[in-house]
Image (cartoon, rainbow, N blue to C red):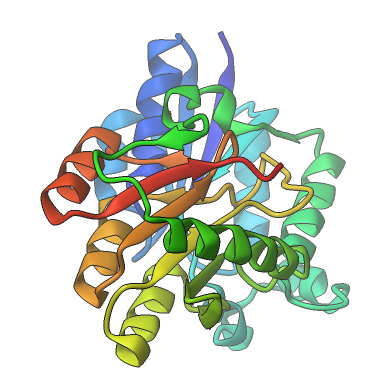
Length: 270
């Protein structure tokens, strides 16, 4: 049994983790962001602390008080907030950002990990608790991609892997081996919507992990909302990377895809 701090962003994945950790016998102390973290999480953890954006000092001072030496970081955090809160950051947070060479995701996360290490706190790989959500390669739906769609998948996964290596985004939308949209700060669902406005229908969405994905941070995740965005935009295929992607509500996702005639496939990078 362990005592784990859960730094929770947006979405349901922190709740899923909290239940899994508690079922294992661990004590979960959650740190939620006001206006971001689902308040429902409070019902699934042993204790909850609510924090404001950019209040690093308060957050790290709570760690020894709660006797936490291990944390996980889960849930979506909108990247654009980094550029909007300069006047709301405490001095410790400003110092961290001032020492960054850029504001890329991994630059920030690596610095956070470095700072936590000074307090003797280790960031854990949360997927150890979430293995049931990580699929192996294969076609999940009744409908398999057509040959032209497989060709688009093969083309797009190389492009997506290259882009993710530069910490740009992890999702590429393609049709007829032509890139329609790439993910940047806006997120996967917004990228799909933008692609749908450009080509209307029949495209393929490919989401991959970074070439050297650190499974402690920002593991690719899809769920019903992503599939609904694809269906609304007119997409025909959703392709995800095997062994490095979390799928939320998998049974419901596959059922909806089957109802709408959409292919969902899990691909290997080899």
